[in-house]
Image (tube, rainbow, N blue to C red; front, side):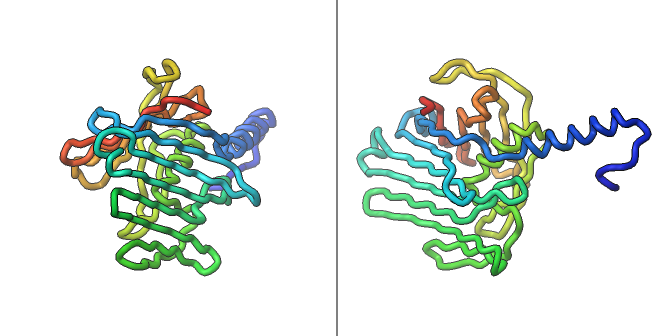
Length: 242
C-alpha cells in the first residue's frame, strides 16, 4: 500500500502530509538529563543510583547508570554497578554502538561487553564465558538502552505494544512492552502524571519488569521495578532531577 495516494481533496491531502511530517519530527532523541534514584531491595533502601543521558560529538549519545551500595551489607561489601551504553541514531531510532556492564562486590568482579559493527555485520558479546558473535540487525539495542527507546516512542505518541530488537545471551530477541493509561503517583519531587510500561514475556516464570515514565518531564523514568520469580524485588525511585 503506497504511503501517499492522489486525493481529490487538497485540504485532506495536506493534512495527511502534515500529520506524517509531525510523526517524523517526533522521532528524535530524548532530551539529555541527569537524575538520582534511591535503590531498594524488597522495599528497604540499599543504595543510590545516578542515571545520565547526554549527547556527545558526532551524533553519538551516552546513557550511563552508576549504582552504589550505601546501606547494610551492600555498603559493607562495597557494591558498585556501572552500566554504559553508547548509541547512534540512524533512521530516527536508537541503535547500540557499544555496551559495558561492570559489577564489583567485595573481592568479586563481573563484567559484560557488547560491540556492534554494522560494517562487518557482527555483534560481539563477551563475558567470563568468552565471546559470542551474533549477526548484525539494524536498530539493535542492549538491555540497558531500551529505556531510552521507550522514552523516545512515548514522546512521539506511539500507541499499542512497543517492540525492540535486543541482543541477549541466547541471541537477538524481540522484547515487547505494553502501555497502560495515564495515572498519577507521588514522587520525591511531587505528584507526577505517569504512563506505566510493562515488559510482556513469552514464558510465565514470574519475573516482571515495570517502568513508570513522567509525562510532564519528557517521559523521564520516575520508578523502575523488577520483581523476581522468588518474590524479591529491586526498585529505583526518583529522588532528584539535575
